Image (cartoon, rainbow over all chains, first blue to last red; front, side):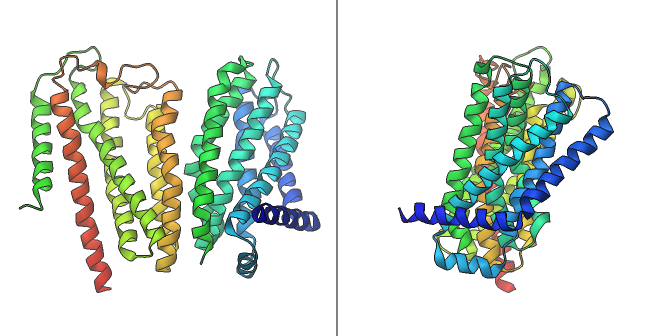
Length: 221
Length: 218
């Protein structure tokens, strides 16, 4: 009960901080929009299905690394200590992951909207399934990158380490995601994709469980 | 003598499996022909790697529970020895692929995922080098090691089964069990696996002892 209350307070705090500065949201939105625009200028014509899909996920990969990395890297050591004295580490990692998941889902949906405005959605695609893939993708990005950014921030040498540590971990997830999204674009029957959805769900639950177990050790200095 | 029986066993088994693997009869199959003997050298490398990485995770968990330098040294040396076997597994696989698939590296899912999982452990070593403070390094690298292990399992055992791969045992291709109908291969394969795992463990203990002597003299 106490943890639930702490999680609520922490998420409230994150949202309040974000709303005051609007730094991450605007920055990331500008990043996504400008990347899509650059792609549009360099591709000139609408790319074929396969490239369309791959391009979207590459844009999302880099946008989400930038969006989630700040969750631990941006905060000062003093603030870490202050939070440490107030709340339990389990509450903190749950709150950060939930907040990042919400942020990522919002960001991905806006990015998808803008992306489909510039490069029209391929004909014959299963729109609902593609949305499921993007939501699952943002959840996986959020859970994995939150934990890795915590590790990188404790190691004390920010962005560089974040990329090295997170890429090998995110690649298996990304491969399943691209496959799932491609099934949706090809308009395959939904029963074909159930395996991939299950696998992604299992990976997410696994990562979340391992994070909950390990984070208290990481947090205690 | 009593303590080192497993070292002798490991050495004997590896020598036996190398000689018997090259000389004993094997089933004659199309495309594979004599390259089927690579089974005795390629597959044990991965088994040895998995065993060494499992040892490393075990000591990482211990080093998180009880703060002790020894556990951290054991974890990192198990990974160092495991990486050697992983790289050897990649090389033996690539040489085999040259004679059966036509290319050393044909971007088969199994090859790619194996390379990525080795990359995971290179990232672990980079992470270690990035942290100067000893206790902090032990703690953070143990956490990353435990975090990475499930991903390695997914990469090596789950994902290749979902994609179309040419690798035996994946994507509907016949695996090891359907080749050795006369069970001649089993006589060499199982000793080879056990032998290479023992040799891998031996390498790890030697590396650990060197590391701990260095650690004490510093």
